[in-house]
Length: 589
Image (cartoon, rainbow, N blue to C red; front, side, top):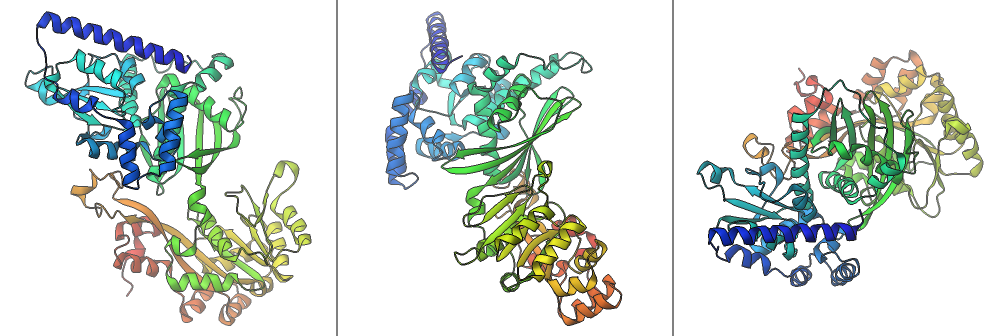
């Protein structure tokens, strides 16, 4: 269905509602006052945008562009300002509610249920909700309603709803379009679950590819995908997981390392949504039995967002995992932004600026190693310094840095790429990860021939890094000669500044979405190659001796750094115990 067809459909539906309402009023002989209706129908989108300009919420250029887009495309100025990425739906709803003196409606706080007076298709197409209040129903006042609108300037559809109901019992609220559609989707999923056939029945995903492609290009699918990514950006999520369990679709966001469930896509849109993801990532939409990887680049809210996509076949169809790489956040990330203490940032900066050697950032998957490496590169990048990276995959395109994507299918592995990189006379080489002995040997060769090498390794702590290299086949004398220093890090969630993770306030906190934590901070331990460490490695390559040598020189384990953050009120003992283990919060004798 084209946009013009949808507009005609909406117009016809609104008109039929108006006619039905007129007939109802004629038969009842009742006419409601104009209070709520007059306030809502008096809204002027152009005046509202001018007010936002005066308050520096948007620029005059943004206003003029939104009005021009609205005029040319036939949408409202409010829809245009959101589609242009100038302001988010949530922020717009907050501003509208404040400007109109109306209640701010959110799906998770809703106390009513969707009324049957207006068809669901009409409510969805008009991005509004007609809610029947639970309190009113309990009192026997079946005509007590709340009208939730995302766009107050849509007078035609708003007027139709006012006419179908008794105006005296309608309250007006402002909600985000994504929340409105999520509420409708949730009800649809509940209804489908109640009437679903036997769960053991096979899932029919054999529709024609052309029909699936057409569905993927329709407004509901596009809107759901865009709103999901916008929601992920609002929450600071790192990943989006679109999955199917048995017959039930699932949508989860990874926020600060934890998966948070979100309203799932309607079952009827699930395959179309996957198809949409494949189309944007330039993947084969007909392939359902093989894993596929791709990339998507979107402009949302005025900034570029890179998405790394992976699809895998599962028992019930396909699952999609989307890694969000916010270019705005990564482009200017510095060590001070990661939460390191000043002495740690100074140590990293000093070690990385040496003329040669290896600096290793270690920790488990998801501990922020790559972000720390990028922060170091941001400090080192300069016109007089040639930097080459070998990554799998390239997480983020950096200005002034030559980046190589590893491709094992063509024979371009880490070791092979490093061998060729050395012929390009680099000053700094970043190796995404030292995975095997061959890559380690090439990295050490580069460090010993006058290059600074930055890389990552999977170890639990800094002292264990030196032993891990020896276990990989690197000779102890090479480790002592080439390694400048090693770090180990974890990510700790920060206590939400709005609710302070207090049980009473946490549940209703919008800032942290009820999690009690918002954002993460890195906790790090540092180990520099010293004479004492070299001696310990040369004697017996024993981790205990290496640790004792480091402790004698002032080495501070991660648990001590974590306790400093607890004392500063940045995080709490529960989070430290989760990330580092219960022993990390025990007092040493």
